[in-house]
Image (cartoon, rainbow, N blue to C red; front, side, top):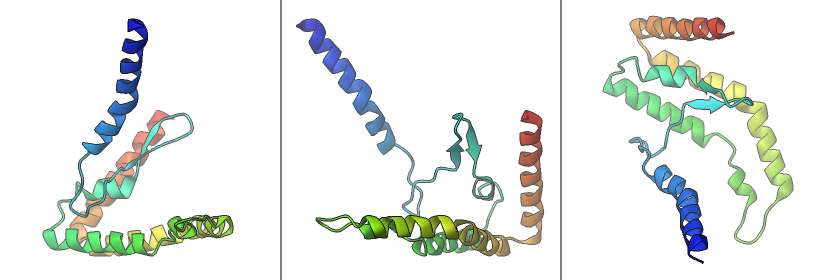
Length: 144
């Protein structure tokens, strides 16, 4: 009996701890949590190059505001799959349509966002960004 109780407590700690850890992640001023790494099929992490590198470019306050507005605009223009849900129903066809729109427009929308952000940078920052991106590319080539 005692062993089962200890096992139940241990299991609940293991299952609940990640939820508390998620609540302790830093929330950025824009109110969004930022994760700039992605996992591939083999569970290797990959950076989200441009967005991660922007943090290293010493943007002015005005540039940061402009970039934040561009990102917010980008997020607003993305189809929301939550529109397929109502209080008491789920529209499967709408959900599929919205997901397909997201997928079909993803590259073009991301390129538009990158172009707008890139235009906010000064010439020195653009050169620094290019060096960083080349450095990451070379690093990836060395790993293969």
